Image (cartoon, rainbow, N blue to C red; front, side, top):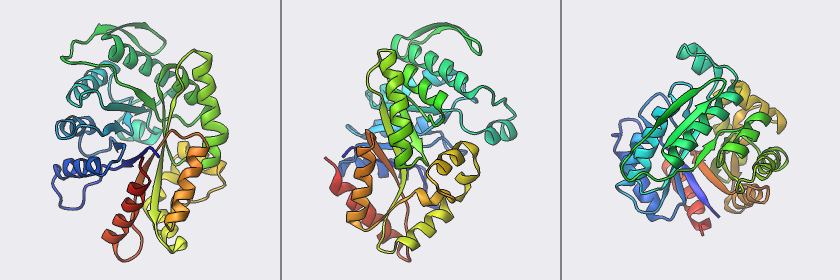
Length: 306
């Protein structure tokens, strides 16, 4: 199984450099990749660039960098720099984020997100692959280039959920990275739509990277209750709400993969059978022994690598 860790969380009081120690440790344990969200704290690509100098093999991804606040030329330059410092191990995950965060918090316009992402990623790919772009679209008009030392092309994946976004991900990006998306949706919506879009434009088979909360725990009800508590806010965001409704799930945390070792392994395999090319696990604890809970889940995931 290709298994990565969806991490980036700092323990209370821990220094920022402790994330680098975590990534180094996970590489030694054989994990395929490590993914960092771009939230309101540190800069994800800066951390990836630093991690690249301390690791040799593990793939390093963003899941995801919100697009509206960063001009595509700026993000392409930053990504090319981080990719050079990781010796070509960056996967740049981008997405439009959510309307409340873009409009209410940042005062920007959240308009035509599918068209925005299509044009945005087209520019990113041109700058990343060729080092220059001449693009005249509806939302972006740009003619420029980059000259980053040791630059290499880097894959771009989109946090695609809706049909138009999945079509764009297949036609102009290298795949998708999902969150809060269940197995039925992956099998019957995500994979068919993105695969067809890629095939119709002559692009290679897209990556389908599935992010999931995961907890190995003997008491399923207790583990789900903890997940509901941790991930409650996602159910209020329309982009995620549609995915949860499609799975018949009322609380976001119910999407979590939980159970004993055999049950979790079977559920993860189910996502691969549905068409996922990789799973990135957001490991969370349940029960009174948080450290032991984390260790149990990581141990199972480590045993499945190969």
